[in-house]
Image (cartoon, rainbow, N blue to C red; front, side, top):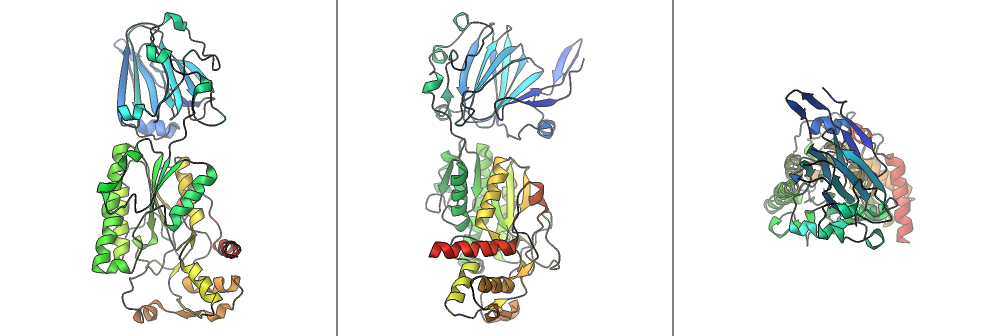
Length: 477
């Protein structure tokens, strides 16, 4: 006997999924794959990364437990017996108080997202209720639970066996009713590098989407000093976004700078990856075009699977950081280039020079595309909130590849100045006049196929620059 194929069905509670499991039976009994990551993720179950498996054995019919909303995702089923399961959405939002009930035998399972109250009542003797969770239980974690009374008249669960006839703990019997329950907020996103251009954009993006977050700058989470990290904040986090890095490309070529670049971009990321893996938290890690040597012909773009070949200390340390970030089971490595944000950057410098009458000399043989931090922040949040597939992504503006000289001319034009005031120069001549310059990729153009496949919007670079300068001009008035 073989049950129906593996299927996953949505319910009226967002994220709560009913799973139909194939059960293979014969004269000896039955067998099922209760959790099979590859098949279940392919069928539509979130890749939630379980780290603990628990079993609750219930000898008597009518044993009732709940309603508990926990600060982690949960995958429940039964090994033997039968239960009546009831789930109530106790998360903040319009679905607060929504109920779903069903009977569960060995042929069914339910995926319960964080913040959805879970409860069950046994319908057969010797029922073994089993569940996977994606965080380690502890007494401290239990303080983050949200509870609801099983007899709450608002949700009005139709229990098969009346609650005055069941085996029920005194604690569960005295949980609060719905009108006294504080809804559970979504798990927070951990933002590292909060004071940087990208960090500030990530905070603004979370604020605009009302996504809870905890932001850390170097004073509170220094990647070079893992011993001082507040690791307890990882418990129950939605994901970590590592927007912190040592980005002083030229300084990294010095003995002192080399040590710091490796401490932050490689060794620190290694410790961060280990901490995320231990806590079962996904990691979104921001990387760079500098992991490539830039020798690809300028009419081509680097795909995500191109071999890494950094030519600078900065690029080497970032390539090493990518390697360790990829060890986290759920990770997104996002490479970007030529980043422009709120702060000191190339576009801001060119706009200031134009306004102050300076005629700059700008290299015209380094090719790539700009990336604006609000767009990159939106992309990172999108990957996390949509639980995009683990892997490496490229994110920049779209449009033809250009040089720094062309961008400088655009800035002069858009700010009302003569673009011919910008003089082109080769990288060789520019660096000859400025000793200590780190080698830069000649071609920094990143292929955006991965971006589009993930459903991410990319913006035209030329029009985005004009809009950015216009907005900056209005803000400075």
